[in-house]
Structure formats: structure tokens, C-alpha cells
Length: 244
Image (cartoon, rainbow, N blue to C red; front, top):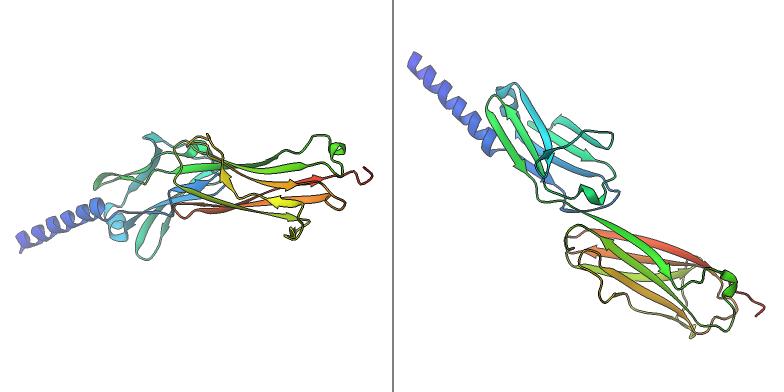
């Protein structure tokens, strides 16, 4: 009888150890994030493991180096549906947060390191070019090209990107029947690098006419191959001299 109890105890210990090393699972919403977003990573252990080990410690690492916990880098533990969940939350991520993240777990059962899919943080800059700094230079009868430019920033080559843009004036779509106004298709700029691909679309006036002054908004919708989608906006106000 005593031998049987010892065997059961040994088998139970082996089962918990196997659970510790094999049952840990990770949760990662996606691999590509945009600057300013809140990134969350999680490791889930079975509740039986946490109870049996009685003492679990952990640390988060980026590229093998321990992370400093701060106001925007937080960790927490939760019990969810018979599971022990260790979470890392990073608020307002920036491009330099890109890298490989790990969670190293210590317990009486041993030590285990869980590795996540590499994280890429992408920055997006939107601007307009072609608008004279001196607004009084805009006069009826002159031609004007106003270009909306979208530039991506990352530390690794981006997955395929789709970008499409629309222009509005004072919140309303531009009237297609206005023959003197044309909008080009959104295209990638030749020569832009894989780390900083640039796309642009141009709003052309040929020429500027009475009533063209106002606030123009370029809205660029971007979709990355992994499913990440974002819309960025940029507005410029054209002050046209109506007396010219």
C-alpha cells in the first residue's frame, strides 16, 4: 500500500512537470503594431500547475534582455477559466519597441522560457507637399498640384502594403464634374526604401478658379498583408486670392 502511494506521488509529480513544460500557451493578437497602440502579450499556464508549484516567478525579456517595468510597461496576473495568465501590456508603443519578446518562468517545477513571434512596430507619417508657404501666392488662374504623401517607418522590411486615398473639401467629396480638378491614383514613390516605403496621391487644379479656396482633407487608408488596417488624415487650407 505504501509503495503504491509513493508510485502515485511520483506519477503525479511527473504529470505536473509535463504540464509545466508542455501546457504553457501564448496569446499574441498580431505581429505588426502601429506606433501609439497598446500591445498585450500573455502566457497561460494550467491552474493545477500554479497550485502545485505554489511559487511562480517570471520576468519579461526583449531580445534576451530583461524589460524595465514602468508607467507604460506593465505586467499583471489573472486567473481565468481554471488558468493562470501572465500578461505584459505596453502602452503607446514606438518603433524602438520592435523585437523578440520572451517570458521566463521560474517555479519549483523548473524553469521555462516562452518566445513570441517577433514584434514589428510601424510608424506612419502623412504630409502634404506642393503648397506654397506664402498663401497669398495662390491666385485664380494659376495651376497648383497638392500632393498627399504617406511614409511608413520600420526597422525591418514591411509586409506588402495597400494604400488608397480620397480627397474631400470642407468634409464633402470633390465633385467629379469639375473638369479643372483631377486626383491621381495612389502610387508608391519610385526609389523609396523597403524600410520606409512612401506613397502619394496628387490633387491638381488646372487652373485654380473662383470658389476653390477652402479646407482640403486627404484620407489615406492603409492595409498591411497581416490584416492590420489604419486610416490617416492630413488637411491643408488653400487661401485663394479672389481678386486676381
